[in-house]
Length: 547
Image 1: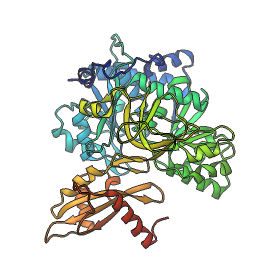
Image 2 (image 1 turned 90 degrees about the vertical axis):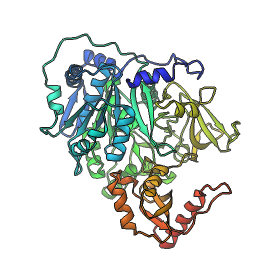
Image 3 (image 1 turned 180 degrees about the vertical axis):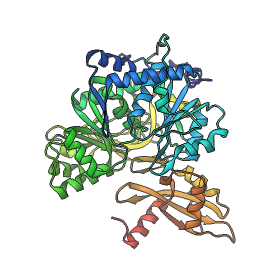
Image 4 (image 1 turned 135 degrees about the vertical axis):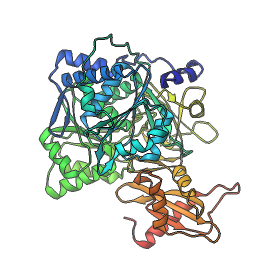
């Protein structure tokens, strides 16, 4: 059964969940926008990928060819098409082709390995996947060959930037003989994106967005931030994340703003790109901003074209925001807050005189209704902590798993984020913590439960507890506390080797493993992770490793 059919079957009672058809929706797909832009200005460069300057006309022609190739291979509306690529222009075309046919696109983060990729492809019932042949020394095609027999729904694997005799490649797909057929009418309210995000149970949740919900997130952000049609943006954040996907793959088709794609971050290269392409806007995680500022200070470069730099993901120290004003001549940086489910709940502060709000809050709420609730479900007063609950036209449709959806929405249609925050008298939102047991490693959300489950697979480990520990560059990283079984032991290297054998993303490997005899626990037996986080903090201070 196609994923869109699954979703309609499980969430057909929209009235009960109080999900309005918002009048603010544009009712345009990204293919509609590309066609409109192409009709007006076909030579508009929408994407820059190294020395490739992709025009809207080229993107649309290639996407139409690719879509027809997929059609010939029996892809129909609601089928799931996955891709694992870095920030390459091929991802732009793959995404646009999926939209032309009404397929559901499933981006998979390139850092994921066999364990995560198999889970996502099986859960989404993906019918086909494009993979980078090789990137950063990892062969994705070999991974897919290992997984193929375990994925009965996966009928096609194609390579990008690398040919192999075992399968077709992207270049062949966009250069096949075209056939004449009537393009399907794609509803802007249909599911267009399934995006996997870590959950508290260790099983990633499948976030479902429609064409309308994602378009609304982009439209309101462009409007509030004042992004002009002719301006150039820089996208170093992965296009397989909601931020990179929205602003890297799709925003350039809205009004012809140009996006420069970076497939791997390098501050020196980024500075050169910003100066050469006159970049006015970028949006990425905190470590990128830190490294960019460090290099600009060292070299006395002020990047006068830069105007806006929203950042988030990892924690954003207030001093970092203040520092931008001192280093970058015309740029205002500010904190923003959102998630895959609810993109861009806040859009920051960047007007004259708002430096303090920009640096010390996560911004003003736009286009969402918001309420903060205490553990009993009652609203809290200004300045008091509560769970952040939101509703709005950019909010996701729900999760693929109906139980996940039912447990995340209340009877008024508000999504309970699992995040804790406060609202200031000015109406600013300040994120203060998480109910969810997730570790935010430089913007990558990693489920502690997932890593704990992997550790529990080691024959010498009786119990494992994974917590966040401070990291100078990434904000947070993983620390594992381990209790051995009686008369058994293992070294740190042996434990890490076992995790690597499970083919998990390297970002999920604990950077510190602490062996203990017992965990602090509540009366009901739950591990008191707050005490473990304090413990690792004290250990880091004692070792003089906390910067």
